[in-house]
Image (cartoon, rainbow, N blue to C red; front, side):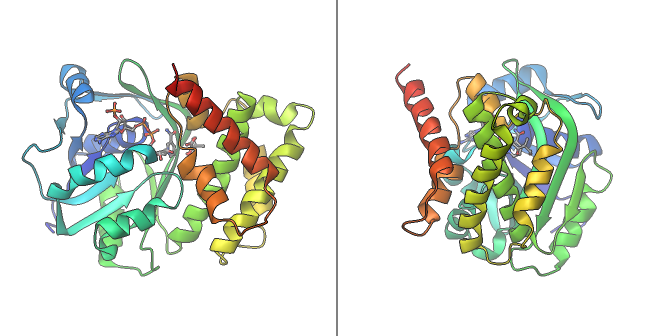
Length: 311
Ligand SMILES: NC(=O)C1=CN([C@@H]2O[C@H](COP(=O)(O)OP(=O)(O)OC[C@H]3O[C@@H](n4cnc5c(N)ncnc54)[C@H](OP(=O)(O)O)[C@@H]3O)[C@@H](O)[C@H]2O)C=CC1
Ligand SMILES: CC(C)(CO)C(=O)C(=O)O
């Protein structure tokens, strides 16, 4: 890989890919977005637009659609929704060499196994982000709160040269990026947090503040969280004892106006990652484990999905 200029392919120029890809572009990195035709038209006509508390940004971008000649790339940043991953994977194949690193930023965990089956396992890094953004109807990335964290690391916890190179890549970009030597556990922590937070805010159709102030909101949130931690601990024994307490405290200290991207998608009548997040937890739970709140959230989301499909 060229030390000077790493070539980055961002799959999906939505809320996450548009933001982080845009910030790398702003820094002067070599960024290409792999998008679908409608998004390409938007990007060609108006450029990439970010509206953010950390500073707005607008720039022409290099955008390609599947099959266009480009690459190979050094890094692929995966930022599609989980329900689009299967369809998207073959489209990145031509741009991936045996030197390319794949950095997924999806919420959840089960995509890691899918990626390791599709590409050689040593190509796949662990990654997560903490950011509250959405893609507006006009195709602009809008950020609602301050955090714009991106965490990455080797799934086998090694401190490798490529992790140091990624640190270099993100340094100086308007992103709070850091390497982790325990990325899998951090991804589980984020998964626990997001399935609780997205579950409760979607179910209650509200940002987190009113949920926690409602009659039994704190109690229901805590119970949902404990069900999720129980399942997660069965799969990832390295989770710390205090995981539930810590996550609960994080949720209680969120800005009251904060919403999950899942709720924002529901508000836009878009599909949700129910199978990938809550469904996957239910599937991985040992038989007989009682998960009433997790199953309530999942059933709510599936009911929403079928209503959406029948529209
Ligand atoms: N938004 C947020 O605040 C956060 C989201 N996440 C996670 O990040 C992941 C991405 O979410 P988010 O960015 O919000 O989702 P968005 O829906 O905003 O963006 C995903 C983009 O992927 C594009 N896409 C879908 N399929 C393809 C394809 N085959 N080729 C090219 N582009 C494609 C979509 O474009 P189109 O359909 O228009 O073609 C869309 O613009 C999810 O797992 C989410 O849970 C994590 C942290 C925060
Ligand atoms: C809670 C948040 C905004 C943090 O990244 C998130 O991951 C999501 O809503 O999908």
